[in-house]
Image 1 (cartoon, rainbow, N blue to C red):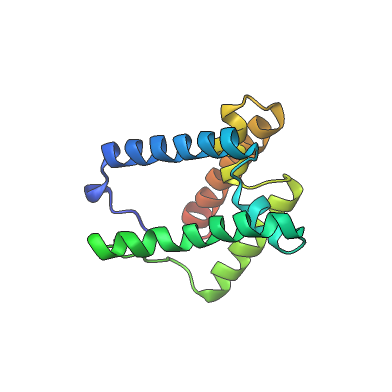
Image 2 (image 1 turned 90 degrees about the horizontal axis):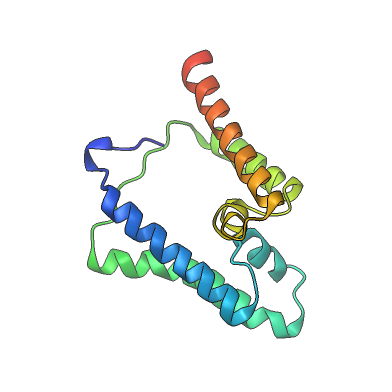
Length: 143
């Protein structure tokens, strides 16, 4: 994936981060649950009847928000620097890492770090180091 640095707008990123933080805090205060995507979506596979509704609503919201945005603004184009095999491998690695870390980047990075959870601090640091190392190896060693 390539990032167009000339179009990078730090204010938009900061505002988006604040909105995500407020939404995660609201979700925790109102529902007593962590807004971690892997836990919410994964819970649909083995959900109890009373848990299905809010999980489906959350997942549909993840899909509906960008669709609603596309109605009022131009959606930026996304270009991947790899083929389908690279995306499949990346997805599998992220999935395996999510299982080992007992949560995803949204659960640990947004919700866990804000609660000063030691497990989330370690998981987020591990995610970041693995990401930096992967980019370095792919861009500078294998290129």
